[in-house]
Structure formats: structure tokens, C-alpha cells
Image 1 (cartoon, helix red, strand yellow):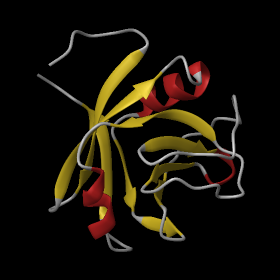
Image 2 (cartoon, one colour; image 1 turned 90 degrees about the horizontal axis):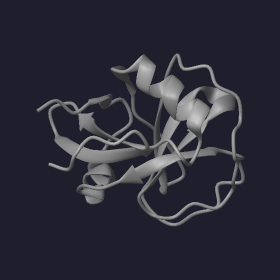
Image 3 (cartoon, one colour; image 1 turned 180 degrees about the vertical axis):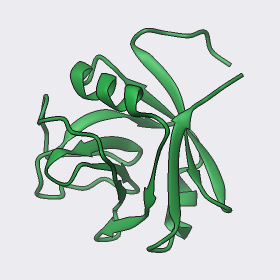
Length: 128
């Protein structure tokens, strides 16, 4: 396991009963949003999809748009402030919605392809 960092936080995206995927939240991408999400962990919600390229779940996190972009690569993690949702990019895509980049998926991204609507996502800080 890597040493703790102020700018990077290792977290786990658990698809309840299916898989655990290691992720990194990167404070330098969007410091305010990542800080708000980290203070809100653990987060849990039902899986939804935007097309076939984005899996997401709604949260109670309230953060505005920060360092927004519309282009995302496979493995990116973003926050959609208008829906208070955390989005996981399964493929390179341009969703047409402005989102705040917050991190990267480090683990088995293909596990997201097996997610069904209604599966439960749980996002929490990795503990030793």
C-alpha cells in the first residue's frame, strides 16, 4: 500500500455483493469538491447509468462546479453537481454535461460493466 498523501486519497468503490474497486480521489483536480466528498464518506446509493459509458450514484454531497470539463477518459471519476452524483467512466466519452473531475479508478474497471440498475454502490475510505 502506498504512503498516505495529502493530495491523493485511496478509497474503495464497493458494488455490494459483487466487487471492490480501488480508486484514488485527487485533491489537486478539484480541492473543494474532493474535500467535501472525503468528509462525507462513507457514501452509499443505488447504481444508475448515463448511456453505457457512465455508472453513477446519487449522494447528499452539495458542492458546486469546480474546474469543470466535458471530456472524460475510461477510468475517470467525476462529480455531477446538478444531480449530486458521483460518476464512474467505463469508456472514453463526452456526456454533454459539465462535471467536476475528482479522481481515477485504479482497480478492475470491467467490474462496472456487470453492474445492473439498482445494485448498491458504497464508497468508503480504505483502512489498513
